[in-house]
Image (tube, rainbow, N blue to C red; front, side, top):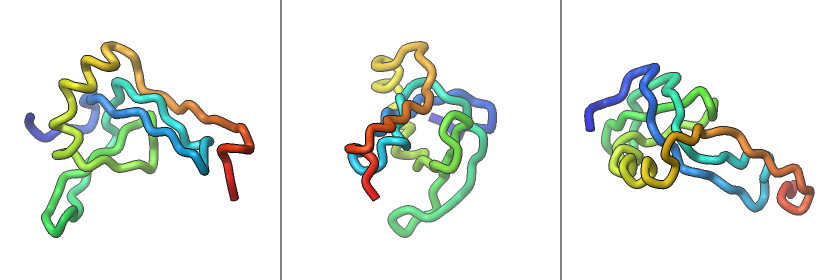
Length: 92
């Protein structure tokens, strides 16, 4: 898979947190808002950020190999914030 550009759509997985449920995210199709080169495992690596989850950067090579799997899981569903405000899941 080639390197994505700003505006491209990619699949992002769900993220659920036991200690800070306000940050829960329902995975799906998202739009890239920025890309940057960083370091992962000592190597230059492309990272992407999506409009639907600002401030979170994904290691593109790792996410790229999951695109077919995530496409099958989410189809046309869009990724979105899914905060859980229950105090039991928001410690601290």
